Amino acid sequence: MTATLARTVVPISRPGRRNGLAVSPNRTQVERLHAWSESWADEPLPHLPDLPPDLVDCLPEAVRHAREALAPGDPGEVMAALVSLASRRGFPLPDGIALELDVEVISTWPTDLWRKAFRCVWEQFRYRRMPEVADFHGFIEADLAERRSRLHRLESLRLKLETVRLKRTWDEESRSRRTPPDVPDRGMDR
Image 1 (tube, one colour):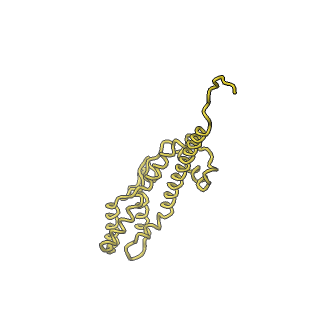
Image 2 (cartoon, one colour):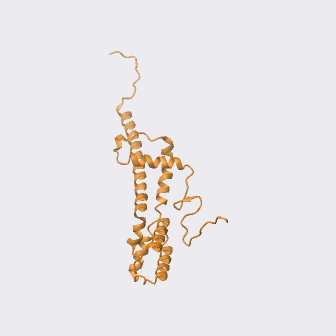
Image 3 (cartoon, rainbow, N blue to C red):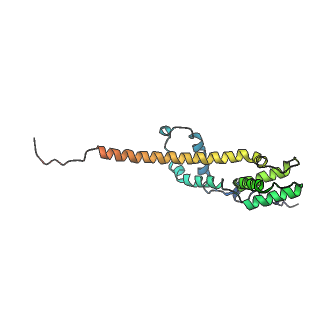
């Protein structure tokens, strides 16, 4: 018997990708950075230790990946999926603005999380009515909150490091203004 990959109508993930995003080549550094940002998230700025240089270098990439992980989905895909669900289960679609608002709200979620929510509703929703946004959201609430929290912690760390850099620059400028310039001795005794 040969092993085959199960194919789904809605692809959950692609090879070489994690949660729908490309796997970073320096994954270990990014994971260290996430751990660092989480452990120092609530610490006041004066207590922030010096971040290892390799982690400072991967911070912009980590922030970019965190933003990509929250990139909104495709409203067309959401609409097509809701129409398919309503058709399959024999539910009437919401009228006019209600359907538009459902699509608008759901399409702000990342595509992979929307697909996860859709699959969970498809498999587990038992009520004889069209699922509402909250029904979909319930399946991905923790994942969405974790992604938002991760981006917030990374952005907070980035801003703290920028503040530390600016403070050092301003301190150096202040010291250079306060120290009197060296005046050469002209050999005059008083």
